[in-house]
Length: 324
Image (cartoon, rainbow, N blue to C red):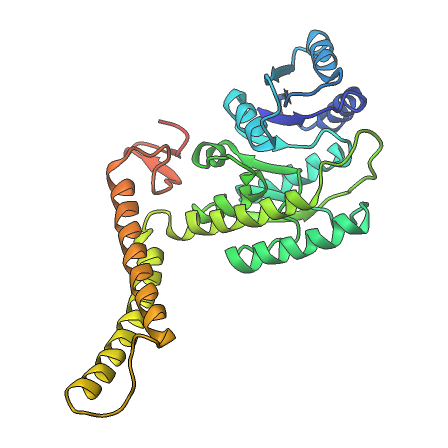
């Protein structure tokens, strides 16, 4: 089964058209399909439209939030409700083209686990396009996963991927990065991008800033999530060494002045003293935080395993990791 998850926020004018286009795109695929609309606290008539679609089409279901919790929360709710072996996410504003589903499915069946859409010809204002290019370049450089459009809403992936990643905040844009960090095969395909017909854009400067902070979070989780002392302790040792060397030098100056009679002047008025003490304290604090983080990783329960199993065998049969 193919589960299609559609996060919705004030998109009442586009839902019926999107539903019709998804039906046309999935007809003839040979896959049974379910469509899960997740109303993320819409203030218009989106929920009424979803209820109407669910009443007329048994493959449609809806989830309604009490208020707006964000796209990551909407996708998480959809993933928990999905019954399919394959998961497709698509935005509700009609800018993502459901006709691309067949091509993405064919690419996935080549042996990939995640197929990310790439809006090669993006039909958005320049103040969205250029910051997005900068952001995508940063994500590719920092995470090592080279994709043109990490934030494309059109994504297709296997249910095993959904079972091993956790979305919160605005980490939904990093699904390919999180999957790649756990060893899943990730690729991208160019997809058609259409101009906005209904609703309004949710893009803004605050969203770009939050995205950059989330990028740092993802880098830490994927690179040092199981060994936080390696980064915190590394910084701690660096600053501790700088501070120690500074204090050692000043100690030599003090000895030269008070023991050997040299005229080096007092050390209490030197800025190096304050900087060295601050660096030493900062280094000690970073080392302490690293040790505490290691204790949390080692002794607290975690929602996800620290490894990813591709398949299992009991000698008689080999099966995917999703089968127990």
